[in-house]
Image (tube, rainbow, N blue to C red; front, top):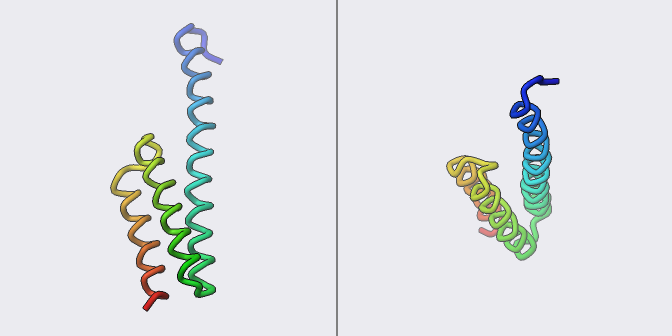
Length: 88
């Protein structure tokens, strides 16, 4: 445990930030997993709806700084490629 008062406060805020970031990352992974499952069983309407929701979740994570904007774009692109592959 730190001895300096500001260090003690930063330990607390770091723990809070980590918990929030973990929650957001988990939501991103869950949304991506749902899209991947939908593309495994080709049902394009479900996959397209889930892709919209996943894109929204990924964009929110990027705007909060949990994901880098390029990482978010890469994730969205890969999911879109999978959905487009089954819709053809």
